[in-house]
Length: 161
Image 1: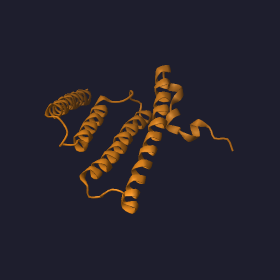
Image 2: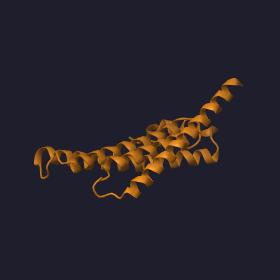
Image 3: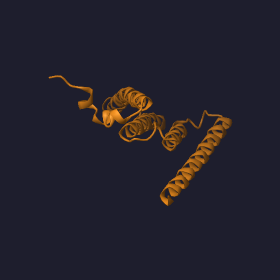
Image 4: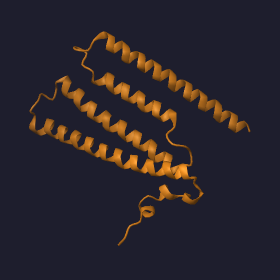
C-alpha cells in the first residue's frame, strides 16, 4: 500500500493550487520544522520520563532536593515550550495566514524567560544577571502588550469596515 503525502498531511495541501509559490514554500518549510521539532519533543520527553522513573524507582539522588525539582521542571518546561512552538507552526499550516504570528513568538519567549527564572540557582547567580533577566522579561512583556494592542486595534478597524 502506497501512502501519499497529501493523505498523511491533508492540511498541508488544502487549497494547494490556489497558493502562490512563496505560500507553497512556506507550507513545506513549516512541515519540515514540524517534523524536526516533533523529534526534539520526543527526545526531550524520553529524557524526562526516564529521569522521573529513575527518581521514583532507582533513587540515586534525593528526590526532595530542590535541585532535582528544578531539573524536572526544566525538562517539563522545555517540552512544553517546544510543543507550543510546534503547535504555532501547525496552526499556520492549517490557516491561510502568514507564517508565525509575532504574538505567539513573543508568548513563547515569555515562557522561555519564565523557565530561566524557575531553574536558576539563587545561591550562585549574580545579581546583575537577575537584573538583566528581569529587564528582558519587562521588555518582552511590553513588546507583547504592544503587539496585542496593535492586533486588537487592527481587528476593530477590520470589523468596522
